[in-house]
Structures are given as C-alpha cells and as structure tokens.
Length: 424
Image 1 (cartoon, rainbow, N blue to C red):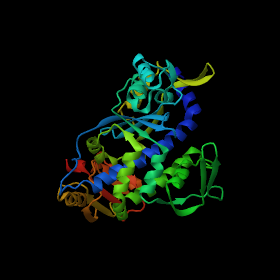
Image 2: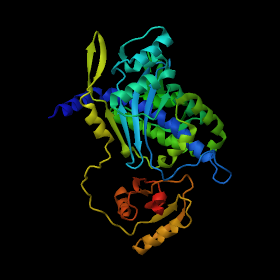
Image 3: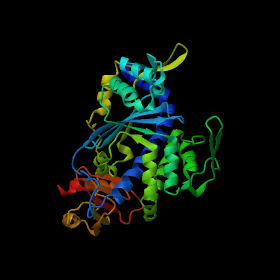
C-alpha cells in the first residue's frame, strides 16, 4: 500500500467522528440559510413580468469555490472550516474539511494585521485561532489566504455562519413540523451544561421552534447507525423545512425571513451573484456530494495538539478531489417497461415542450397520461422522478444527462420535469 493511501486510511479512521459531527451541523445550517434565502428571493422577489431584480443565467456553466466557516459563540474562532467547490458541468459538489487544529505559519502581512488589531502578533497558531488574533473582519486576508496557500487553489467567496443563524431562521418561518424519531423506546433527551445544550424532545409529530430544531439536528446519542443515523434525522428535518418554505402560508413571513438571513449569515457574495446559483439548486442531489479531509496527521508539539498537513500529498489530493473524470461503472441491465404511467411537466418558458415530449414518447410505444407546467422554478437539467428508480433509468436514452430520483409520493409511476437541456 502506498504512503498516500496509508495516510488516507489512518486519517479517515481517526477523524471520521470529529469530521461528521462538525460538518453535519454546519452544512445543515448553511443549507437552511442559503436555501431559504434563495427560495424566497427567487419565488417572491423575482417577477418575470413586472420586472426583475436580477436575471438568472440559465445556461452559463459555473465553477465556484467557497470557504465556509462555523464560528463559536463569541464569533471569534472558526471552529468548523470546510471548502465547497461546485462545478455545474460535472454536477458535483466537493467538500474538503480543514481540521480546526491545522498548524499554520503566519506571513509578515498577517502578523501586521494582528499587531494593529491586538497590539501583538504570533508567528504560528492553529488555523481556527487566526481570526481571534486578527479579527473576524480580516478573515479574507487571514484564514482564507492560508487555505488558498495550503491547497493551492483560489477561493471565490466565503460564508460565516453562527449557531444563532439556524435557530433564528427556523423561528422566522414559524417553526417546522417534524416527526421526531423513537430511539430506544424514547424520544431525544440529552443535557450538557458545559455546552449549555439541553435537548428534550418526545417522539412523534410536533412543531419545533429554533431551539428545539437545533437540538434535533445536534442530537447524536443512541443511534444504532452512529453518525449515519444522525444524518438521516437531519435529512428528515431538511425535508420538513423544504415543505414549510414552499407552502403558500410562507408569503406573509417573507420580510422576516429576508431580514433574518441577511442579519445572521455573513458573506462577501454579492446579491447579484446569487442568480448564477439558482438554476442549479433543484438539480443538486445528495449523491452529487463528496466529502474529503485535508491529508495529514495529528501531533503534539510543545504540549499542544496540532494537525500537520502533508504538503507532499496535497497536489495529488487536490487533483483527485477536483478531477471531473467519471469512473467507469458497471452497467446495470436496463429495465424497459412501456406500461408505466407517465406525467410530463415543462419547467422552461418554451411553449409546447411537454407536448413534443409526449408525442416522442408515445411514438416509442409509451402512454403519457398527463402533461402540464412545472411552476416552482426553471430547471437547468431535466429530472426524472420515479416510484421505482430502476424503471426511471429507461428514459435516460431519451433525456441524456437527466437526473433520476426515486419518489414514492408522485401521482404516476414516472414524472418527467423538463429542464433547459430538453430544449436543445
């Protein structure tokens, strides 16, 4: 086994638990915050007839890299750090976790910032401490620059999230109704006075406020599947959250949601740049997400625990993570069943597109039960919803590059939502 593979194996075993605890809660907060903002902005502040605040670019590919920081209660230390890269052409979201204890050497310019802010500077520290010495307002010149130099990449923007942001957004939409799972014959109960964390949720369907929702997504004791079980609970919450923000009742809460997101999530992303992400939100899937950890080893130096990055392994690590080459997969035997019931919906502004698809499919021997318009938003990629995913894949030959998702709640066996790619 090569040295690089040995490093990967050891670091994954050692950091898996810490990594998923840190990333899961911060990624949930990020998803909720940006998701709420994007949905509300796109569906309620964007009016294609009366005028627009920005015009979404539906066909331009994007390749953006963001640094996401989860800060402590004081808002000084970046205790959760990860890098997100989204390439719309590869349709893949890469997540790179940077351990908070990563040892960094300060540049002369960075030491000058700390000198101005605190009256003193340091030459070496953990990466999460940089903003406590130099100020969170200098995160671009401090932590972001360190990550860029460490990984040899360019970071386009950064996002800073607090635990308070999660709670406030949930409260802003009037709470979320969730079916709290049963664990060991009971609900979710946990007390940690040190973290001021008190979780007491009985099992069953109930409306959770921000504090209760935080407890739900942070709870980690008693899951038979460990962190996998907790992630499933978080996904349960996000599904319930999505239903809430897409309900008609949300319109009265729009001003409060907008204000809450803008007040609690700090970023250097310009409002005009949000439009480049909107057409791709609906095509994102959990299967498109890959998690990685910066290669290295934890060591004690001078009585302190540091994470030492393996600089030799970084170039090949970045090449592997950011590579858009698709590995060869074993081709499953295609199941063709032309007796399935089908619904075709048009999400684009092109009139008659659903009708043309109906004619094409029926010429191939299928029967299309219903056509119509998909009114939630314009999709960049066609999505094929199927009660049985294996039956949905037969339509990929008619819609190359489409996304197949299983959904047992759809009205027909197959629901094809046409995106801009279907018009080409």
